[in-house]
Image 1: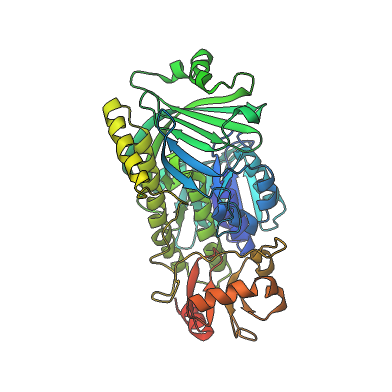
Image 2: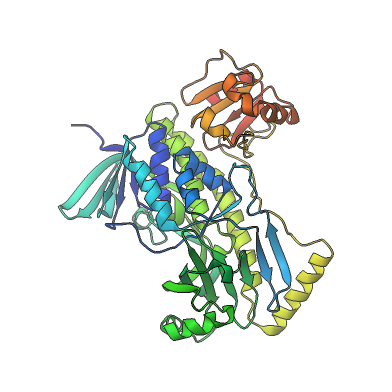
Length: 490
């Protein structure tokens, strides 16, 4: 009888868990995903993914299908009650460094169906529905997790257990991992609608900074549109989810007959980060590891980035191509990025959620003056590079995000280079690279559509070669020999 049922056991079959399974399997790990529910949750939840996340979906064969159900828009505006622009994030429809539109408004059930279809085609991974996690025990070389199923209690043995099981995470609780509360807690009513007439809806994403009722209005995929209304003191969930109350909230938007109500729910928008993302052989990902207010549209994005960071590392470890110490880089790399996105979301939320009229007027005056003076932080959202972890410290561009170049005919570079790590240089031909990496010389015919852009990147960084990790973070740039020696020695 085999010692383990799989290399990686993932609790939670949402977007983070399934994406992690797909990536880990592509890099050589055997994976089982256990999900407590029988089917995908049928109603919308997350509304946005960015260009980097679409690139991750591309790496698992899902991006084209997801893009087909998504929508784009030109910008994201924060407006005063009278419609003046306080803050504008532009470029939402432009192609970002990841090779996809910067902002993609999604329909989460459609995304999940696409990811699960890919999982069903993956030989090294499987999904087990209606398996509810109940606990685990850890040994020196693995874990044994128990599940309540229709066939009674079942036990699965794995080398690693990952909790991708949401904000209430039974895995996190079982591991005794505490949360760092970042002190943001606001109740909002979320209204999702099916659209019959798009011409009567705003074509861009909006935050209405109205002290009488802070409001969000955003596009979604698959013919949907969303409004979010902040609850005011004294209001209850029962009161604000009444259809007549909702009709009153939507009346100023004049959408009667243009949309039909699909979903209504009250959420508390929180900001929390787990204090440990790895505890022995247990790891956390997605909402189990961090929760962010929705104002920056980075909730699902953060979980998918976790999957991209963690999946290839688990695969390499499963294939004995890396030591388990590689996992020590996971939280070191991801937590600063997550905290930066949460800080941005809190800043946006604090801008929106002012209900005192005098304070709101002061905010408007200050932000309008800053914008008039050209001092407003308008533009595309940018996130910090890796400052620590599995990178060649001190090397040019180490820890930065390596772009995906697009050819004149629309061909994306990643499809030609594959899902391993890349050593790309002016003299990489014939160089022996370790498992998990592939070597590419600029003159290779398959690089011809992107050769000029790649050569310019190397020239800009004064390097002969660049080593790009499978999650498309730059390990470092230098000579090919230096990079390979450092990769092997990390």
